[in-house]
Image (cartoon, rainbow, N blue to C red; front, side, top):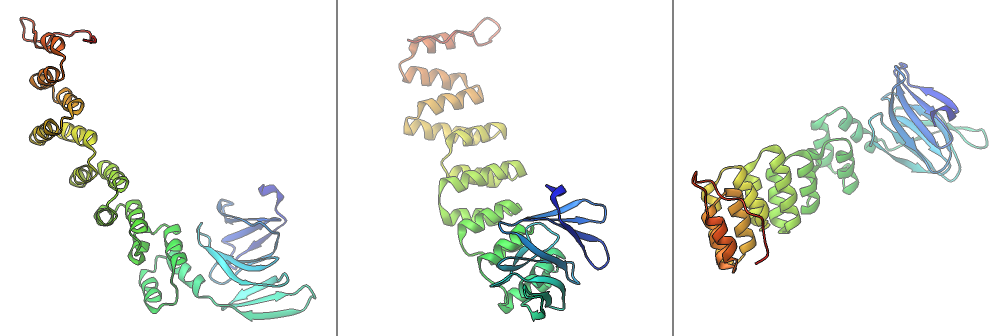
Length: 293
């Protein structure tokens, strides 16, 4: 696909270039490494960099821009006829029309400036722009997230589902836990528990398994963490609810022979209970083949 490029546009100091094709642009560095790929549905008419290394380009109906960081792009304005960019500087585009007349036009640079601050990690400027109300809405949050700052975008999200996903992505488990408690759905607690186990946050993992009533995971969690006291409490709870299959599973994990025998007796498998209670002279549990009684 890169072999189908029509022409090359360089920035002012020759550190970045845009390889422009019919519907595709590749932004490369001076080492010829591809940094960003832009794919359009309609044909690309022109392209040029401004003084901030922002690539502006035109299609049949739009003037658009893209930063060198993937995910930072947008639309500057719509057009009725194609414009052919000649230069972009100080928020002014200079272009040729289809009638070959040379014109210029001031553009709103706010969105571009906001994403430049994201790219350069100028957090103070980002917060100022957000507080001033110059940029807002879901698109702003999406831009921050796409730029690789889910923890920053999380500060401006109200929806608990969106906040949960952003918190989970950025590893902010306390914020994810707070959102999950508001959502009160099993699926979010299970997702958070899985992430917590990976990150070694065992207290959060236990909290989530308890909240989601994921008994199988909770039994396994207490087994691998050596929480015998908690396993005994789980056993008592399972006995009260008559959940004998999980009682037996719990007994297997903890190698509690007496509990296994009790479960087998209570469920009518007396022969298996008897075989299980038989031990050899060394005190080792006899291994028997499971049979239907």
